[in-house]
Length: 351
Image (cartoon, rainbow, N blue to C red; front, top):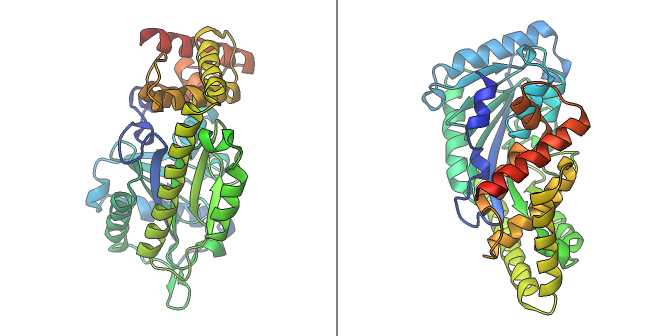
C-alpha cells in the first residue's frame, strides 16, 4: 500500500454526508477480539505476535467484506507513515508506537479497518460519516462473523468476549461518534453536559481517542462499558445520547447566531477566517481552533471563504503527518507550520 496515495483520497469520516453531519462528523463501531490459543499482545513474545498476525491475514483472505483490502505491516513504515495512519483514525497512537509484528488492514476506502496486535489481537472498526450507527454496526458484525469462520475467539459464557481491558468484556464493542460542539462550548455548558453523559455511562475523549487532547471543540463520545448490555442496546443508547447532544448543539448555535451575542460570534468566525486566509505560520492547534469557528459559520449558512466540506478536509490534511507526507520528507516544527499556513491559504483562495 502506497501511503502517499492516501493524500489523494478524501477521508471517509470527513465527508459532509449522513444524518446531522454538520455536528456529528462520523460514527464508528469497533469490536475487540482475541485468539483463544494465544496470550494477549501485551504478554506475547514476538513469535506469538507473528502467529496472531499471520492467522488474521490468512482469515482476511477468506472474508468477502475484506476483498481487495490493503495490508500494512507497521514495522515496514517510518515515523511519518505511522503518524499519517493515526491521523486518518486507521490505527491508534499505541499501535504506531509499538510497530513490531503489528499491522492494519484497510478496506472499502477507509470505511473498514482492522488493527492487529494492539491491546487486543483484533480491533475491527467500521466507520461512516454522520450519525449512522446501525449501518456501521451491520458492517462490523458481518466482517467479524466472516473472520470467526476461520478463527477461534476467546469467549466465556459468564464474561463474554475476553479482552485485555476489563471495560471491554462482554460484547467487546465500543460505539463512538466524533462530534463538533463549539456552540455548547461558547455557551459555557460543555462541562455540565459531559457530567450528564458520564452519568449515562458514556465517555468523552479527545480527537484521537483515549488520553488525547481536545482540539477545536471536537470530541469523541462513546460507551464506557461493554458488559451487561447487548450490542443493540449499546448502539441504541449511544445513538440516542449523541442525537440529543447534536440537537442541543444546533439549538445553541441558533441562539448564539440570532440573539444579542450574534456580533461576538460573527467576530469570532470572521476573525478566524481572516487568520486562515492570511497567516504565514500556523500550528496545528491554532489551525484547529480557527477551522472550528469557520466550520461552525458554514454550518450556519454564513457567507465565508471555502465550504463546510473544505473545512472538514483542511482539518485532516493540515495534521503534522499529512503535511510531511505532502512535502515528501520530515519537516521541522517551523517548516510544518509554514507549510500548513500556505496550504490553507491556497485551498481557501480556490473557493
